[in-house]
Image 1 (cartoon, rainbow, N blue to C red):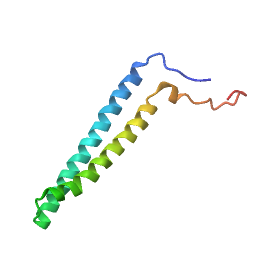
Image 2: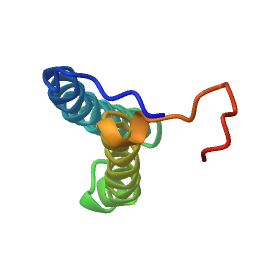
Image 3: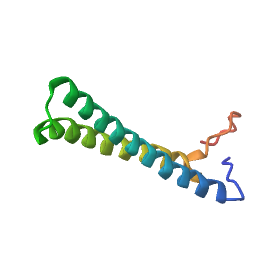
Image 4: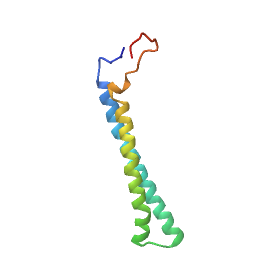
Length: 94
């Protein structure tokens, strides 16, 4: 027996929260990448575009991949159909 909520606004709110959360992850990863670029620039007295590309490109790719998977996980977790679990009582139905 599946339990389906009567009100689906909870799941809409969870999906909005999932989008906001993943955007925060992406912005945080970008901020960390800029900070690392600045630290390397100070340590090695290097301000060239090559150093920025060496740090920012992998960080941007990682931020995109992390954001995608976080959005996918949170989106599916907020899906009403994804929250249906079988009863703990085994009544012969699966």
